[in-house]
Image 1 (tube, rainbow over the protein chains, first blue to last red):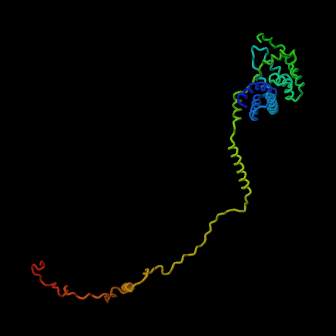
Image 2: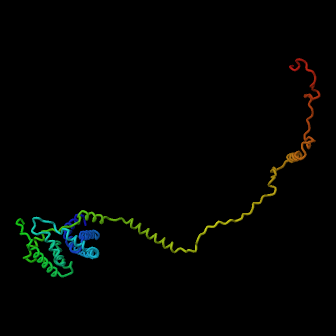
Length: 164
Length: 156
């Protein structure tokens, strides 16, 4: 794998993977970095790279969360609240702070399905394999999560941007 | 299964337009680390370290398994050495005799011993004979040692 391909892989998946790992651990960046270095160690990412990266990040994040839970749960919560989850978009239609809070309040399986499909670009079949459930179950979790998000953000969703 | 509910489509489009934040993830540092880890590593130092580890382990085993019965102790032992034999006549060493002693040499040696024992009186008899008088040489009696010398005689 050459450097340009690896850089494209980082640009495509790193932000979504960090958001994905946030629901488990306080240092998602470290987990994502280790996952990308694992790509280098094995000589390249399998095709397609997205599901493999999400699976590696999921396993490492859960493992890191177990270690963190033993020693500093309160620090984890404080760090999770402080870190930005999304880029601020003044002209956007959504309040990113409200979106972060609403996403954090979703059940884990719904949030996981939304992040993996919506920002990670995984198909529902890949999301099902990732979460260890069927494709239809992944789809149902996704739809239920998006509905819950819309309900929570109902009052803060900006009107559609006429320019877009 | 990728079809999504139509009533959620505008909301999903709005969600998809919000990019997630990468947090503290440093893209350049990650690329640097990846490049460093992908660099080929030489086999010399790992093999050298392995060889030295095996060698030191073998030496440790050999040292631990060495028999303690063989102990080298250095001691100083004094042994009386026999006295060297000194010959009795070594104090007065004889003069080395010539390989073939001539009769004159033996006679001379005897004469020297007599002189050493009896003094010069031992030389009473001269060993040599006076040569016969010569006619052209005046004797003592013929010389006029006390005769008066005439003037000018000495300068003739």
